Structures are given as structure tokens and as C-alpha cells.
Image (cartoon, rainbow, N blue to C red; front, side, top):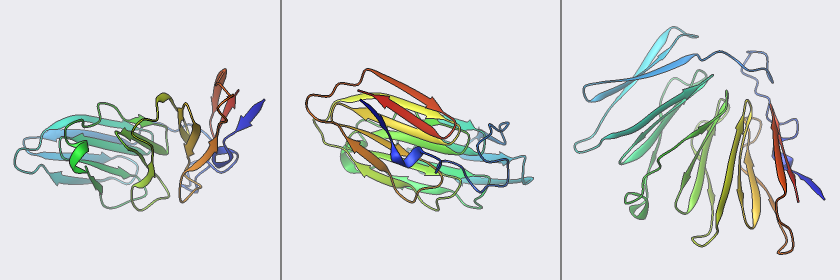
Length: 192
């Protein structure tokens, strides 16, 4: 049986004005200077910055295409070439003990896996989007391509794309096991 994550089918294309559906060159560069994180936006010829808080440390600076994510010990900060401000997401109390070690980026979308939720942003969202996952829900693969990111668990396939205002999911039955996955620019195919 082949299931398509509905969110990704044709909806992953952004209206960013940069040939939707096609990969783009990296447009954002993140750098840390003392207690500041600066993103340099070569597309719009501007820069944005934020200050690290007392005791806050950088865990990672990730950018690809039109999106950038700064992971710190206290929060996630994200931006795109379409935004003029940082999007901030503070960790919940239990997440501070296990901050994210990785961000998954496509050219127009980013996802971060936290202990009990997935968070994502894109070139068309104005804030981080959240999707609750169970504390005992085994995590599987994370997939990313130009316009789509997806997370697989033992119970479901969850996707986010720039054309969506929230996550899309497909529940898997207890008898279904993921046999294969395939990502393309704007879609994810899960074979069970």
C-alpha cells in the first residue's frame, strides 16, 4: 500500500518569487559575533540579529536556501528571506534538559524535533508551527527536500510544507510497517 502525505502533494511550493519548486542557492548566512547572532540576507541585502541571553549558548547555526535556524540552550530562533524579524520559540521546561542537536532544512522549510513535539517554519509562516507527539511514540526517520519536511514515527507520517498553515498527518495502522520512503521537491511518499 502506498500512502502520500497529503500536505506535501503540490502544496509545498511557496509563493516566494524564486521559481517555486526549484532548488535555490543559499541566500542566508548565520554567524556568531560575541553575544550576537547575525543573519546576512544576500537576497534582500539586509541583516538581522538577536542577542544571546545571560547563560544562553549556541548549539548550532543552520541555513539552507531561504531559511535559517539558530538552536540555543534556551530557544529556537528562525528566519527566512521573506521575514524581517526572527521567529522565537522558547523551550518548555522539560525540553531544556534535552535541547535539539539537529535541525532539518529544505530550501523553504525547516523542522526541529523536540522531546514531545515537532516544530516547523517556512517562507510562508509568521511563527513556529507545533505538532504534539507522544512521549512514548518511537521516532523514525526525518526527511527533508526543497519544499517539504516529514517525520515518521511507528504510528504516523507527519509533514510540513510552505503551502500549509499547519502540519498534515497520516495515521498508520498497527499492522503497517514503513517499507520505504521517497522525497521529491514538494512531496514525500511513504510505502507500507
